[in-house]
Length: 245
Ligand code: UDP
Image 1: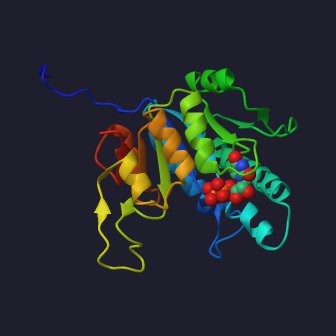
Image 2 (image 1 turned 135 degrees about the horizontal axis):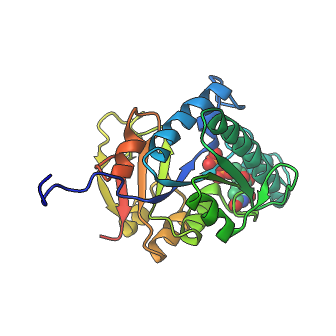
C-alpha cells in the first residue's frame, strides 16, 4: 500500500443516531412493528461492525406526542411525561431487535425505571460504548417541554460524540417539502445559521442552536436508503451536512 492511500475506516468513531419513533411503526404509521425494528437493527449493525461506537436516541411519535394531548386539553407536563415514557418502549423494542442479531446493548433512561432500564449516567454510557455495547438513550431529556431532537443534541455533547446522524424518511434537507413541491432541491450542506434562518423542519430550533453553540456536526439522511448510514459514517457525502463552515 502506498503512503498516499487514505486510511480505510470510519470517519466518525462515536455517533449519536437520532431516530423518530415513526421508524418503528407498522404500515398504519403507529404502534411498534418488530419487523421494522429488525430492519433498523440490521442497519445499525453495519456501522457497529466497523467498530463505531453507537449511542441512539429514539423518539415516540409512533406511540404518543405531548402535543396531541395538549390539543385535547391535557396539561402539557403530563402529556409530555407520557411521551417520554413511550420512548422507553421504543428503546426496548430496539434493544430486543439488536440483541437478536448479536449486538450487545444497554438501554438507559432519563426517567427512572429500574426494572427495565438503567438510569442515564453519562460516564456509564461512555463506558458501555467503549466496551462495544450500543447504548439506547431513552426518556428524552427527562424534562417536559422538550423533544427527543434536543435530547439527541444534549446527549451527543455529553458523551463527546463526533457527529449526530438524524435518520428520517427523506434524504436530506430540501428547499421545500419534496413530496409536495416536485421542484424542491436538496441542500448538500447548510451552516447552522442557514438551518435556523430557513427554519428547517427536520430538527427543532432548540436542538440546532445547541449544536451550533457546541459545534456539533449534524447529518440528515434517509435511514431507509440501503447504505446511507454506512456511507455517512465512512465520511462519504450523504444527505445534508449541517455544520459551522
Ligand atoms: N418529550 C419530552 N421531553 C423530552 C423528549 C420528549 O417531553 O425531552 C415528549 C414530548 O411530549 C414529545 C414526546 O416525548 O412529543 C415524543 O418525543 P418526540 O416528539 O421528540 O418524538 P419523535 O418525533 O422523534 O418520534
